[in-house]
Image (cartoon, rainbow, N blue to C red; front, side, top):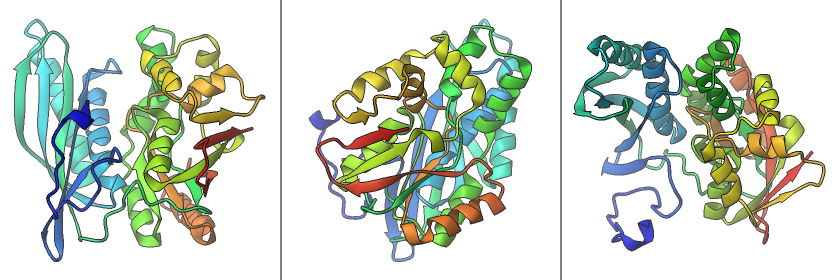
Length: 320
């Protein structure tokens, strides 16, 4: 679909538009560039305040993935007329609370009537030109670091089905509502080759974008990947969202699975995430230092999950 649209060739656009980048980066001057992104979706949890907070953390994640600092945002709201307005107030309060935690202001927005509630934000940030982090600059020999556990899509499917315990819901909400701010700040300070955030296309889908854009291959070690433990049980039960199934189908011919990888693990690695972590390609000589800095900054689940390989016909290998 996107190939049918006219190409944008403005020389002030500082990131390539053909690599599924997380955000647009536009140079205003020699020392200032705008970073913009937008995201919104229907509720994945029942509590409206939590939904607002998660949606805000998710929307600003693209700004953090580029190593930028968010400044302002605009709300995007779809809301049905048959729901109490108090529900919308709580959603907006959740978004504003998370924006305040992140240090940016929500300064307006737009609302339309719709059959299903949806909420998100268009976020604007800033970065120094040349300091932005791209998703297509990974290098052979880099280590791959993931900063949040997987399994959110599977768990939220269980939540919708009424099968998740309260502590599981609380853990999932805490992960989704956690800002990628600290991880981004460490990334900028220590330096990385490339970065993207893990959202709707799952870990392997976003790694595929990074690999193809960079002209490299990758290997992921299943045993090293952080996963919410409850996701394993739900995946074995078949509680896998449609988006995750589509992700798996799209990876056919792209991923080489070790024969010991079970079906539930394939679902977890392709699981569609909401407000997932950052996926960084880091020069091997600094990856342990960067990982230690992430842990010191409170990014407790961060882990080295794999490595970047020289380009190969099969882009991604999954090992035990």
